[in-house]
Image (tube, rainbow, N blue to C red; front, side, top):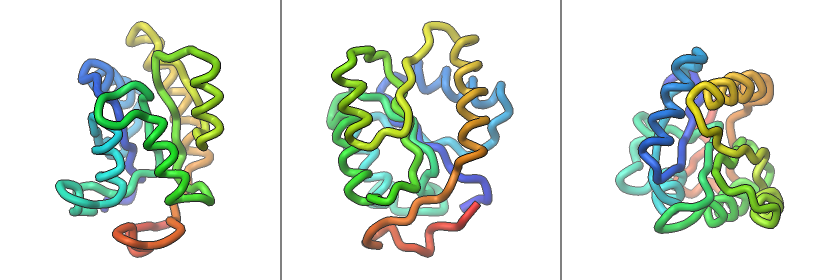
Length: 160
């Protein structure tokens, strides 16, 4: 695992993932970025099970950018799983979605989301959103510490 904490993007839209990666690059965020396309893949990634068992290639992220509406396990399921596994926090979870319904926003927060952002409509707005987010994240980032180790062993973490 490199010295820079990883970012995990959980989004089924390849267009949105591409725009996010470009925005991170343009704003100078050099952290490794990993992507999965469903809630089930996100949980498998975080558990470190196949095909994500190599923690050198698939490190535990410090930040998760999470879409809510995906096939095969939605963002709410991921939030609930993460907050059960990491009850004391440690993972910064930013819901980044096109959903603007108040009840879904409230549900995301009640399940442990740290922030809820609506995906901007154009690349310039997204780049500005990433610039603001990265400034916040760099000030508050800490590596996670799971409640029980399982396949997420404490040896996989380092304070940054």
